[in-house]
Image (cartoon, rainbow, N blue to C red; front, side, top):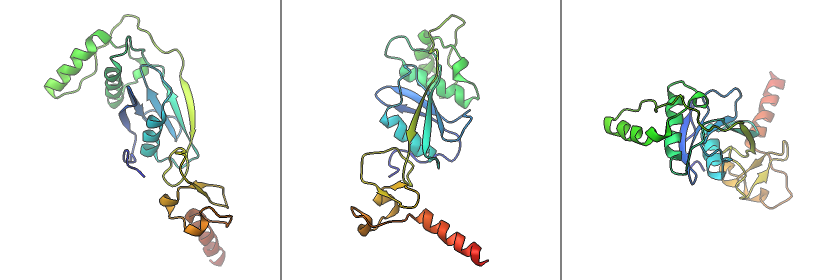
Length: 202
């Protein structure tokens, strides 16, 4: 597993194509296990976005929360990539994309200028009213196994002690524990048991 992206070692900003372009980030989150979604079409994160984000996050908890932020709506269907770039640019510069109002008519030429100058600068803004999404939307996704990814409909084996589910290939589950009623214990539980024993003997 882990064929999509590498786990992030700190806050991340990631532009991703899921049929259209959007921006994922953990910058500015108030709780661990949260990913902010900056999407000018305000579409619920699909399986590709969720899997990429979970792989980067590698969250130790049971769920990951995805928050669609209240960003500017794009007009038309062709500029989602430009908005994703604008959102990522402002995040990397310590600014909040939800408070920005971009001049969509100037964004494409601005991006060309950035490419030609090999320098990314903030996208042009406007003082005019622009359409915006009016409310954030939250989606909770359960994650499993050592790989901390959502349910991929593949084979899992349950640790009997804490009812945690694992892919056999991720934690080297022995053959006798697969498709049987015998109780199997994950390495995490074994380590806890060993630690308790050591503490009792100390």
